[in-house]
Length: 412
Image (cartoon, rainbow, N blue to C red; front, side):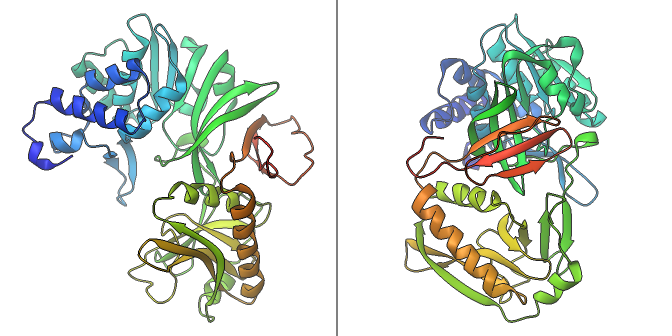
């Protein structure tokens, strides 16, 4: 939204935002449209944020830690609209939000109506206090704001028709499932080996089944639900390898040394155009869901020019051994077409780059245009069914996440 419209009335900006979200089909129902047209987003962002920026379809950071990393924000409207639509809330719905900013709770309250119950919980006192103040200013005093660890939900107002998690989580704690109504929906940005997907989860027999998944980004959960992420600086902050699961072994010294070996570049026959952006989301998750050592690479391209050039500078899929790595890369073929490939380092670079090319080719042939993987979450202590083909099992403290890709022509 252009800053030239900064003097436009907030009502007009809200209407323009809602129209934009509807045009892009993030908003699909009248109830969600009405919420975006009614709730004053500018009252939930810092006073230093202009009206134009307050109503832009973008995230607004509201708090940072001493290192400058965002610890709280008002999420991008497109993502909030998506989550609201996935929740399918009805008037008088009971909803728990984990992670407070205030604005999203107000949107939920508007959809749930005067007979609804909305609880928003955050571990950070400053965040919950700001949410309470902003909700009161905006006229949503009926929302209950709780300062506490979202890992434990809020039992006094349970059961909930929907639990909407607005922080990145690596696990699904028992309290969320216990407090969810039998036919309720859990919407959570689940971190899966460095890839965050907003999952719409519903009960299916003795486990949860994802009925939708969308790539997204949120600030990480704090408290007892903090992610077990490990960060290995291979060249200070310029090249960082990020590992999510405890089963992946990596030798920091050996991988650091690997970057001093000649880079091996290899290219697949698979190409992409910039109009096919959804393919990145599918390919990333396909690579992450292989039952093998895996991490993601975060790179400062300006300071590593000529050394590493990953396809994504923040969450680039990377295959590993303890002393070698190969990451997803791309090169430009013409004005509209790019080619997928890989760059490898270390004594096993040849094997890893060959594996990466094979995986890219299989994805292109079998899964690029398919329905995507089946994602389930099984409570700890239960045993996921034995599959008739390989699947990835990610064991967390409370749940085991499974990812299974359908065979060619098979529905998810």
